Figure (cartoon, rainbow, N blue to C red):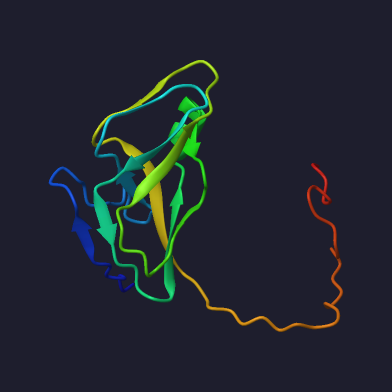
Length: 147
């Protein structure tokens, strides 16, 4: 399978180029370049020291790391964080500490989120008088039940 080549710039010497933990992973790990202390329910924008040039027709999606979420209660606030192809600024991760009791400490080099690059389609809206009928119809927000 051919790889998508994405230009990347280290804005700081200590920035770490994202990498896959395992060869078949969908996301690469993003790492912090600054120390951040997150009190319970506090949020912060954590810099990575990186800027990338995502090709047109693709977008980047910043996702939480499952281990941080379940073990520490720390997640990406605007998950998934969207990086458009024309953005050239520093990648930063909006983290929030949802643990009610513990402070979460981020150290430089810590893996704080995952970045997934995906192909995205440009759409054109077609205004119609009515939509086609489906079995599900307007059912949503739990309409299929729990069991």
